[in-house]
Length: 389
Image 1 (cartoon, rainbow, N blue to C red):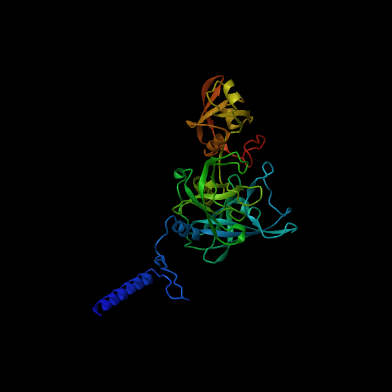
Image 2: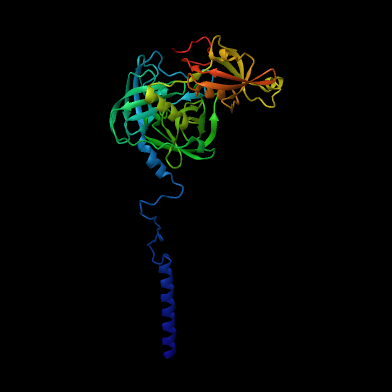
């Protein structure tokens, strides 16, 4: 009897142990019932930033980006696509169908640059606009006035009658590197404020035929119609560029977008706010890039410099002794790599300033001093256009 009781108690103990193990492992032991296992939930701490998140950068920069709505009378229902390269497109949207004959409504983006109501955007967003409306991130809608525009860099400054606005923090262009993360913030297709992520694909893009003065940041952050004038910011939420154009055969983003670097945008913005326009230097020459063949004929190791192909009669360059066929290799002791850099260097000089030029002539370097003139409206390559008085 005692032996049977011992066997019984041991059997019960083993069964209870197995039951405990099954319950602990959430195994199905009762027919018709199921258990889901242990559900693991993330912390509900809203202050914690997930790894790899750019939420702080977006939170910092987004309030500074506005939506811009314009209306204007047009002869053509759509803004022109670049004729020499149909893939390059401005990206602001039209809300009317193609057959609309007269009134056109367009949308774009802008960036609040000063708390006193100054907004930076693209010139092509507001070009010809009869009325400009700005929608702030807090829902307010206000009429804006044009302070000034610079078509040669495709930048414009607007002013709204509001104070204490959330101005963007300017980044440093010189610190931007290929491979850096970047966020594009704007109002694509009019759907509302949108943030897209990408990297800096290239720096110093020029000769695209978009603007007279080009030094674009290239990014693969998705940029679409309506993003014109919006912000390109770094991983800390600091402004590094103003979104301006895309390369696209379809009209949508294909991973090649171009932004005006903040250093150029800031200098243009400050001059427009101070004087309503941008004044640039001019010496009255026509230039072209050196080909390897031309460089060899000039006995240059590499095709650096700008070939002077024409000189305006009576202009600053002619008075300084510059001749067609000279190769401009330095401006103010800074080397010139190509015609675009020459254009940028000369335009940065102040009218009336005495500038030092180094030119190559007959295989010799000549040092010339030129009194800089004021750049006329339109292209520097149009030598028949007289400077502004």
